[in-house]
Length: 443
Image 1: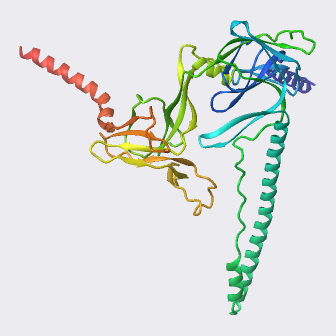
Image 2 (image 1 turned 30 degrees about the horizontal axis):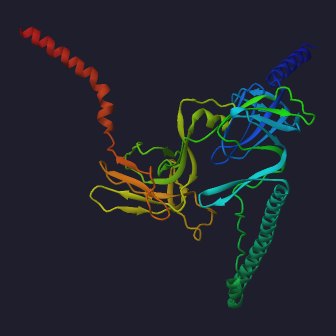
Image 3 (image 1 turned 90 degrees about the vertical axis):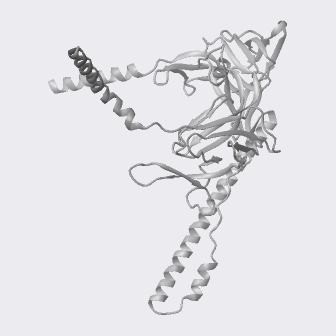
């Protein structure tokens, strides 16, 4: 009896603890946002207690007003939504009052967004109405056709492998009996392995399902916004402020710097004043990219409305890769060298060290890598004390302003003397004391 009581008490404690771990969900009216941040779209939401929405001016942003459940998630220290339990979108129109008292009304539209490849990386588009339905149907067909091609390829590949295995077995059997197998060997040599279908390259990011959204594209300024229901009344709790901001500077050049021995931990150089100090023990792999300077708070709030930032600080934000670029490397007293972009594969080194080796990538010789691990500009550094000046040239061979950087190769400090100094310090102090005492004795 006591055993049953103890088991019951333990079960009740566990249930109480599990119930305590379930976050409390609260019903709120939120703004669901798909906001353009300069390089891609960020999905976020503004709580009912969040008074301000931050949007990049002059770009299409997708908004909707919804009733849902929100809860605090302590593991990531952020609010989350529970749309599976409650997700009610509201119809109506957005009323925006801008600078000078201007009033603008935005109605709901069926819309989706997607990106396509471009010379600079990707180009984002927002389409509405029938165009949105056609784009989603097109993306679905492209995906279905590709998977059908993959299925057919797998079928042909299995047939090819079976034929190779059968003919190989026949050749082995004939040779074991001392008979001529040249005819079958010729048939085997004429077999061609089927080619795998190429992945579709129409989209970088395919369109999502079509949804009713308010397409908000605003000039710079501060706006008040509220939702008007179809009857014309204001939805309670829908009043917010929108700050539409601009980038302070655009077209800057940054570099992603990938050390050969730490390729999983790349660093970034954002301004020409940032000198790259390296020890020269490994090659560097560089990737130049465009960057924009934006207000830190505004950008962070665009990516996630719950984020924090410094409203008085501006930061450089990475955008797209520089297309068709060449890097010019100049060393004192030597000819200028033009660095080209090349693909590389990363191989894990054998042994207990578990290091990595970066080697040129060859698609024809690679049986495991369907795509390169890194596409970058390699540069060898040379001996300590060296200096290398870099700048990026555009596709026409003209230098891009703000792309200048300097690499300095510094000597590695000798570790043994540095480690010995703390050990020698007590002996040195003891010697000084003995010398002083001996001097006093002589006096």
